[in-house]
Length: 87
Image (tube, rainbow, N blue to C red; front, side):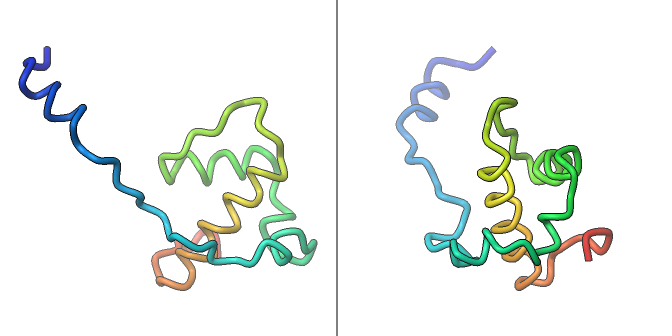
């Protein structure tokens, strides 16, 4: 059980944006069929997002999910934090 003061403090805190303010991958590039993500199955896309603690809606469009995955994939690749199993 959370105390009332803790609950009030949490409610008053500002949300922190964890992602980049600008997309890492230009939108026109996310539609290109030559990106490795476009060869992944729906299951692989969801698994990648789950490992990143991102839980998309089941009925979310596949293209939207692919854009999210490509953006995270490219960001992690640039930072050098992409898991070796995805390279």
